Length: 375
Image 1: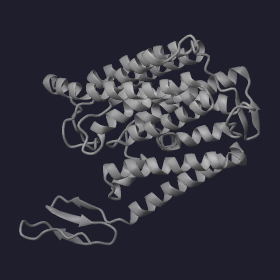
Image 2 (image 1 turned 180 degrees about the vertical axis):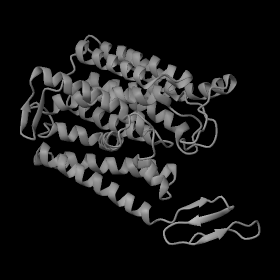
Image 3 (image 1 turned 135 degrees about the vertical axis):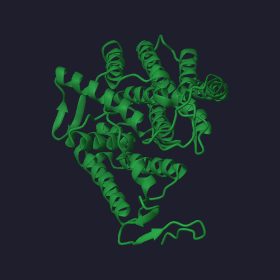
Image 4 (image 1 turned 30 degrees about the horizontal axis):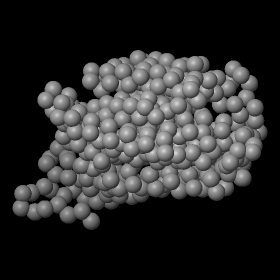
């Protein structure tokens, strides 16, 4: 337990000390995330926060983790280095989605093939228990890549991806501590400490973004942790056996995962690349109905925390029923957000220098003397 606390403390300290330096260097070198028509932020802000997260995380794991007890950790760190260099290059000069995907597949290959990471059973989800070897490998690859992209795509407002990453790694780490899997707990709490320090500088108003370096790294670590969790939690006789570990693991990552799968589905239905940008994410819906960045991060973190509690309390329901509850709750929320957005008056500038209020409004001319009233 002391090792876990020490790992969290070291990761937090290194990242906390590194971020201000990164901000100053980014300002000196003019390395900024420049606003454009699809980005939410209004000012040029450094997007190299992933450097600080990586520094704190990697230093804590290398210093504290027992590699003799868990030799697979070296391969997880090797995959993290792949993600770090790929993400850093994308944050500085921007690389194509194809190259990013190749990098993610390479990282997944390292943790699956060399790190012996594989989903072994679905514990009765849709009547499926043990998985054939080939299907198990394909499904594990898909899980790793989707989880990495889910944190990358949910990183759309200040503090959101970091808050969800902090929540998930803390939950996974706590479970591994309780079940005696200390190497995985060190991995989880090293990331949690680094992300916690980063959030001090990232909550609205953000002074720095994590960029692809940070979001993909958080996604990779969570991909490793969720597969480990599924395999450990289903073992009979351990300290805390979970009877629906695939569903509970999915619930721990529910907000980023379901939002990504929903957005991917919308894009492919519209015959677009699943990686093409749009404004269909859940944080965009919340922005459109008037939520602030801080309120969005706190609300979605609270939602995911509630889902996690629900999963642990009702894991005896079985994977299929629990997954049905998750989908029902999430898409009910999405439907409610679309309904509120549709009914909310929307203002936009018209060619005749006026503004039109939709949803039954009338044309209201702009003037310097009369302020605009929103009713």
